[in-house]
Amino acid sequence: MTTLERINVASDYMDSRLRDLKPEVGIVLGSGLGKLADEIQDPMIIPYKDIPGFPVSTAIGHKGNFIIGTLSGKTVIAMQGRIHYYEGYGMDLVVLPIRVMITLGIKYLFVSNAAGGTNLSYHVGDLMIIRDHINLLPNPLIGPNLESFGPRFPDMTRPYDPALIRQVEEIAKEEGIALQKGVYVACTGPCYETPAEYRYFRTIGADAVGMSTTPEVIVARHSSIPVFGISVITDVAHATDDEDYVTDGEAIVKAADAAADKMTLLLKRLLTRI
Image (cartoon, rainbow, N blue to C red; front, side, top):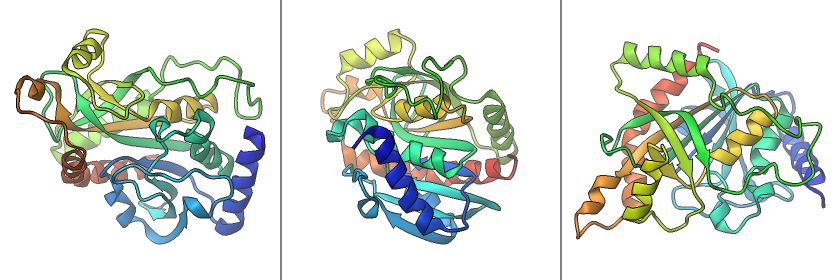
């Protein structure tokens, strides 16, 4: 099955389940950030395992469902858990859910993740607006170009939409929520970063590091979909100076969950402005 055939088969299945529902906004919920899904009204839940040709999410804190319903007056389709390259899937499968959402007609994409703070001023629980990224994962556009989705060489000057960023900054100011704003670097994982790698990422201009997100953003921008991205800082580089420090996946999910209420508020209010 070709990539385009796989997209079409999955999209046809989703379309048959959604019937008259037309999602306007796609939302990707990362590790520990599934709480936003609980806010969706009249939810329809479609497990990834039910979709023909679809990969299944195996990461900690990722339930592996599409949830479709109403949030802040908009019809949304939320990924309750994403697909990662480190799970052993090819990049065509990692971005398949995004391409399916694009085929279903989304006009915006919101992405979230749990990330390690390479910026030494960051603290666990901080929210960081992603203003730009460095992609150290394989580029999902490698291979034959899918002309129906976008051009061979898409522009990536503004991968994260400046107007959406301004809106969230205004909302955060109104709500008294402190925000960081920085550059996210994506690497393959699944091991967490060494202290030397943290220093390297900081040197090349990254404020936070993770194992996802950039492929999703690249395929969204390939189709000219405006993107807003936000990271929850769940561990920090300077903690590795402690000889007894160990990066713990369960602790990261808990830190993300603790910050999820603030992120949920920001995204719900952003939906009312678009």
